Length: 150
Image (tube, helix red, strand yellow):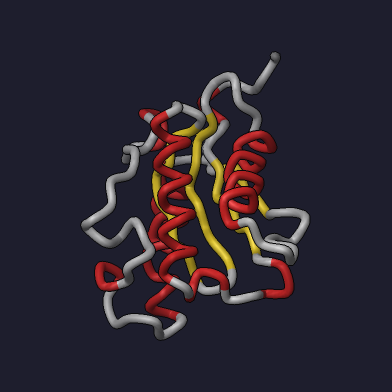
């Protein structure tokens, strides 16, 4: 497989639930997705640098493994979660949005956006308080790739 160099393969990603259903308002659903993200990381499918599970969407800062396309990484996440959830209804909107992270400043801006998202939505007062975010100290995420460190 001929993929782009790792230096240009870190992405800010947004995926939205089907019909904006508030799936991640349910603790069991949020925990199920977090378990999937951890399982995928343990299988070295991607590096997860930051995340937030909002009630009806998620944001990720992610670098796929060298042999994994971004589309395949998202299939692992969206398809894997749908399979584990076993819902009779559609789980996700068909697509997702992504933006390639350009440099350390861009990386930190996206990481800060993810951290502050639940605060802006008035789901908590401080990023560390939100239970479904990498800003919460109970979660471990991967460090930024070398070329994106400040």
